[in-house]
Image 1: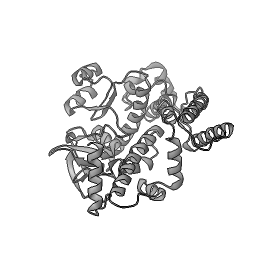
Image 2: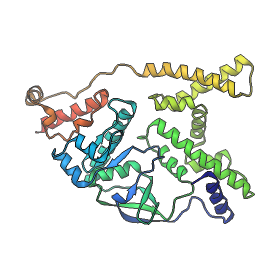
Image 3: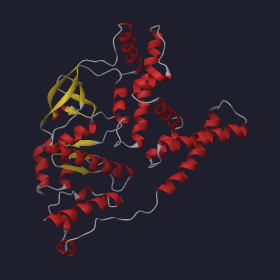
Length: 356
């Protein structure tokens, strides 16, 4: 949908006094194979879904990862099927590492779904007579495929049509969850603000007042303080780029750094209003300072493992190939550079051996 058509739809809805946030929906049972992810969503994984029979063959080791990759042309993607998630992105690349963290989270949720009901259904909207696209709940959608298979049926909240403020709805969910990356939250905010800007243009054309800052924050589902944080953090693209590259500073600390750099620059150059050149110079200084912060954050970690009480468990660890044991760990998707993931897997092995 182009920007002009989108603004016309907003204007028409406002002129008809429609409530933009109150689109009709029903709860329906939908085949997972008829649902597709939203490629523009901050939670999106470059996923390809595996037919249930192929997933079963892979889990039983009757076909290899390479065969699946060739079959589905899955290079630079993540294959998702019943009981398997396979990271086919370039090994050890930033995208591969980010995907691995998402995979771990989705598998954990999928295992929970296998033994209990999903409390909140993902929301979708129709894109054709027989296809739907995920609006919110991408992680839940992927976890449903992992838990039950691509050919299974699940309960979805189905909108009659795509909500006009779809990115706002996505941000409302993303901002309230701790499991989404900081970079993902910033991207979701930028997408939502684009829709808010279009809404304000439409309101002015319809002879209405644009949203106040407080109303904007309310529509986004966040406090005024959080809204100010997001505004400062997205003021310079270098900040968003830094989080994409692995910066893990809390938003509040990064905001403080940005404001300090701005204040120092204004004081040194006697500026009250910043032009493009000023902002470019400030951006360079912010980049330099954030680079130093990333170096501090990237300190050397150590592997941690729970205390081992069983002598038999120690003997098994030292004499057997633990990757061949039925521990439920997907060793092919372990990020061996991630100390936390490796430590978690080792602790799970110890627990398995002591309970065997």
